[in-house]
Image 1 (cartoon, rainbow, N blue to C red):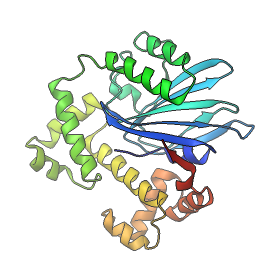
Image 2 (cartoon, rainbow, N blue to C red):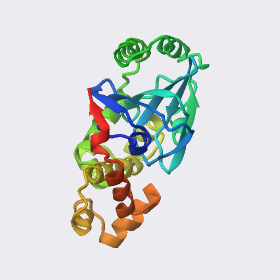
Image 3 (tube, helix red, strand yellow):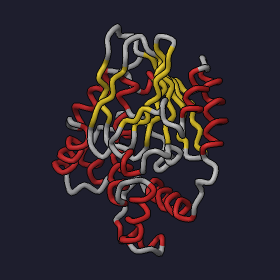
Image 4 (tube, rainbow, N blue to C red):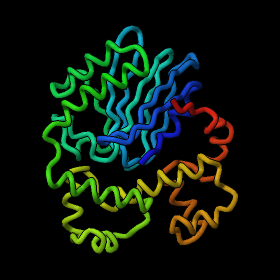
Length: 267
């Protein structure tokens, strides 16, 4: 699933990304805060996780932003440079000190953890986008060893179905497609991701909806509500506001004001 926490783009003037859909990675990205002040950036509901390396004053602080099931915020420091790795659902199991459930809705500092301190230390030495990608991939491949259990493979297969269907399917449909009961699927999802099957479906649906709005597909709210299986436009607006803290129209105005798509450089 290739998506972005959109306010990282809106909070910067130099957001760039490189798509890399492999081994649980969606893409790499970087941005800076040149505003002269610290910024509080909204984090929206998201089934993916974001690994953020904060380069500032000759030091590095490594944040893992776990999957979010409700809105929260992240502090983007002034005069700081950020390098990020967007991770697909359940791609955070290399953090041994936390269970999947404990990472949900949490922001964890990785620099002092035994399982990730080598990764963080080597990333600290990298000073450009390409070397950071290479170093991360080298270290990440070591961390991924022995992580491909049968349950992990099943989770990956089911989550791929959810993403391909943009989250627009019910548990009964997943049961038919997978051959497993909803109860068993929920057990797998709780173990692998820390959230229920429905929660992932809802967050994937929301991320695809955001992607549409980021492309300024706002001409017909009724059509969008129908496409994403909302009962009506009022239901669409209400649920979107629950997830984003504002109406689709208000969010779309922010996208337009920030020249959202033009602000992203694809490398």
